Image (cartoon, rainbow, N blue to C red; front, side, top):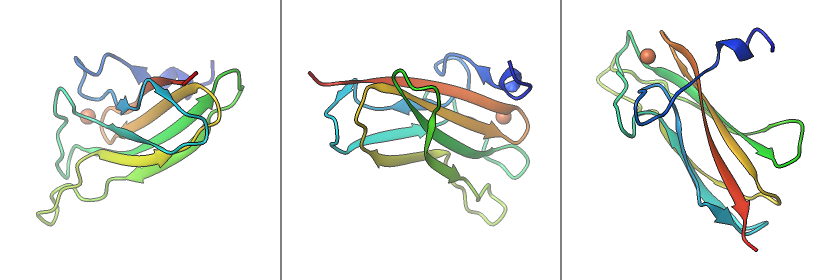
Length: 125
Ligand SMILES: [Fe+2]
């Protein structure tokens, strides 16, 4: 295991405020766009202050049987109350895939490091 891999934390997002949630259909049609939402704090809110916040979430897709994950989106959350503006750590993207696979969200908290959440998607028969 690489040094970075050993630093990525995972936990049930219903119990851990840092774990990213990935929302996508259970099954999709190949080549048809569908919505993927990803974010932090669906069940337990994470602080969003200048001192403590989520800095970014990167979304990857790993097609079934593939060795490598492919980056789908990268969202920076830039406002944390410094100027009375807050970016909630959530994003939605439209995605097309040609095979089943797994979405992997990698979130970064400026204090508590890297957290991973996943969601499998199947192809409709
Ligand atoms: Fe945190």
